[in-house]
Length: 294
Image 1 (cartoon, rainbow, N blue to C red):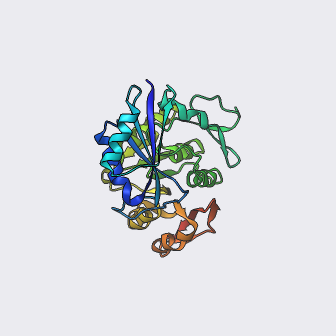
Image 2 (image 1 turned 90 degrees about the horizontal axis):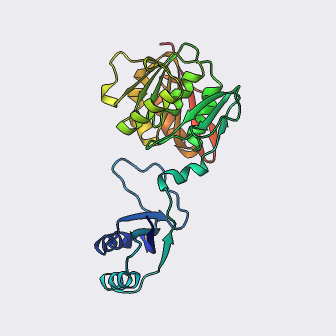
Image 3 (image 1 turned 180 degrees about the vertical axis):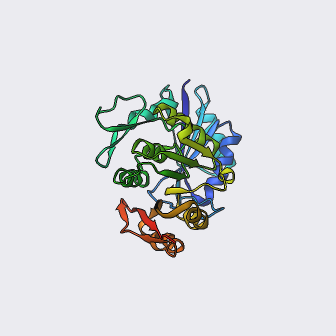
């Protein structure tokens, strides 16, 4: 099916009114994007920040009367708008993104390979991945930093906890790199489904990976290695939980934070862990540490 797309320039203050007007005149979807390369990192709990300058994109049926819709919007919003119409090609948008996802090497041994592409190194450790609706393709610096760190570790026989597992990429990588068992935790049921699907795709036996919502994690669960690639605020808030789930002398790998957030994130863990030097990639940081014996 073909669509017409209307693009409108807006400020943060005016975006809500424009969004409501677009839906009122028949838009089937409305999307807000950054119009001035203004990054928004790690919002606080309950916050919904928006860019100062926005690009609002609305989809309409291909047979919509563009001049009539434009006139209606200008009447509703009391003036002329910076807008343009364009026709979208008829594509399978659920598959279109796959063109931009290619195999990626993480460290010395590990490759992350799209499930629809043949691995480039038959002798490497190849993780076949289809992220589905969950976060985690390996391309973001936070995930890439964690994968490189995992590739450098000896995980043989370990139980690894992947807290905030997303697509399951970190936990599955740990299993392929020698871990015995993974406990994958996420508050999104779609993430747990994606994790199980990706584990099966990589021929991981079901008993080697268990998936849980946060309040369903067994009370006696403990990991030799704790992985948490989330964001700075939840890393701080969850610190008591992550500390208690990590075995004595166990390892900790934290990511999802920016370089300037290193001190704030590491502080609640310092009594229990000794930290290594951080790894940095494109302003993002990854922290690793070893838990004290007792």
